Amino acid sequence: MKYNNINFNKKTILITGGAGFIGSNLAFYFQKNFPESKIVVLDCFRSGETFSNGNLKSFGHFKNLLGFNGVVISGDINDKKLLKSLENNYKFDYIFHQAAISDTTAIEQDIMIKTNVNAYEDLLKIAINHKANMIYASSAATYGDSDRFEIGYEQPNNAYGFSKVMMDNITYEYLKQDLDISIVGLKYFNVYGPKEFYKNKTASMVVQFAHQILKGLTPKLFEGSDKILRDFIYIEDVIQANIKACNPKKSGVYNVGTGNARSFEDIVNILQKELEIDNGKEYIPNPYIGSYQFFTEANILTTKKFLDYEPRFSLEDGIKAYIPEIKRLFAAEVKW
Image 1 (cartoon, one colour):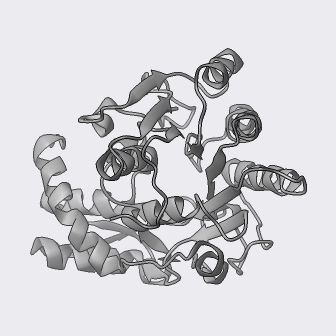
Image 2 (image 1 turned 135 degrees about the vertical axis):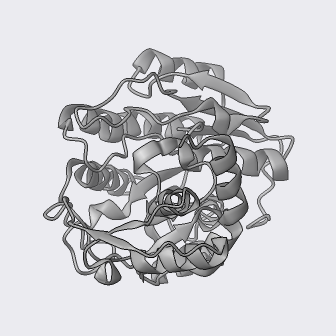
């Protein structure tokens, strides 16, 4: 589905983090809808290297790009020589900056700031030089302990959320200049859908619960899960927001969610209905109290106004659309 009137054919598009969840979905969106576009994917593909918490440092996976016909470059956005070669060898029209360390439980603050904040500014300078519109991934993690999910009310409670606030601050500073480009930051809420599987333990609870259920296991929910509410957004609506952000009525930072918080209990109920398997539910203590968001709900009024964004998938619709891929992954990838 084309989300606006921009013709991306003959345009050169850089997607950082293009072998990851959202980046790879963007790559295939352009390949399918604009076959004459030149798509350059940059990704720090996984190496098996982990943070101190045991999670992978990079989630980029070749399987997310099977069938992709564009340019694929393996590299680190912190590599200034690599960025200079991209600047010299291409003339980008759009940059979709999805690459980041997105692990909210990682404690390595140095690499988090270097990768998420400093490298973003380096890419933004390339965008300005190339006159390429910049669309980048911010995050709802910026809100942290806030009870108001509107731009300007951020209260991050982990290094990841802080790093994304710093990215947004860089954006605001650059927007004070008279630029030839638009810059749009998108604060993603809880995204789920195809191509997230290779995020392993940091993949959404939709796919994790689904595979528990398909294994015949009882889904494990945190105690009080009926009161833990999040704004879960299907990947197709995230792609819509990215495409509409290419031609905003106003540059800035915008929330990307449904505007409707739902519980983890809802996810399990919908999955059990769609999979036609009811294994009951098991409740376990929440080990993340203190650095855990118990409620998120995107205020999307400005997103609608300035990006013409309109979420199309309810939680029920998104999970229903996701079920065939969940089953395919379970048969092909899940070891049990």
